[in-house]
Amino acid sequence: MEPRLTGIDRREALRYLGVRGDKPPADVAASLDKWEAALLKTARPRAVWRLFDLAPDGTLAGTAFRPAGEDIRRHLAGCGRVVLMAATLGAEADGLLRRTQVEDMAQAVILDAAAGAAIENVCDNLCADLAAEMAPAFLTGRFSPGYGDMPLEQQGEMCRVLDTARRIGVGLTPGGLMTPMKSVTALIGVADTPREKGEGGCKNCAQYENCGIRKAGGSCGR
Image (cartoon, rainbow, N blue to C red; front, side, top):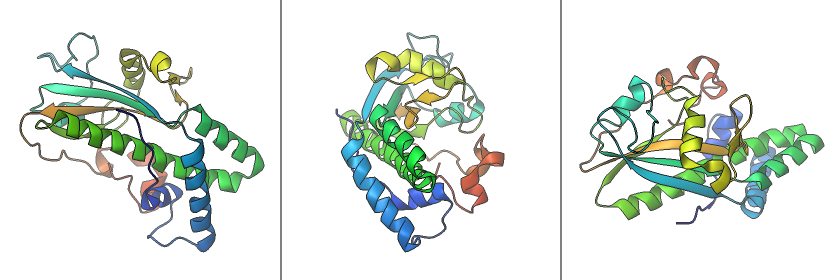
């Protein structure tokens, strides 16, 4: 299945910008229109995913990777299999963002928010395709390192298991950040019966204290 960027969720982009409500100032709305069009033209989304059995000890069968934390354990309760996925907008989107940062930092902030919404769109489309392919199995929502008490450092382990550097060009900086910047790793549980939505909300997020979206009165929706 091919990764697809089909647009950006304006409400999500506005949350990243700390703008409340669905009706931003006219200049911000115009900039989002501009950058959505630019991203649809420039971004080259890529994605990789693998399906694993979930071993009794909590590792993904055939690997040494064990998702850590009580939150991910609860998220995967009742799941016999796990999808490991990674997606990126590609180096082209990073290049657009870097050029804009040099030319106009205010516009770069809006572009960054639009790109954040764009990579979520790619992930949402991939998850919809996975759900269709794996039916009649049931999929949980995505859960990424850094959510709840799952250590952000496990992002590197997930990249190694998926071989993201070779397969989709996603690597890690010495500080542990993914590059290209607009990249995501996530786990998705696969169960034989419907799952209740796991407990979410800001207070269960590892970024609760430092999150600018929450402080502005919004939510990233996780």
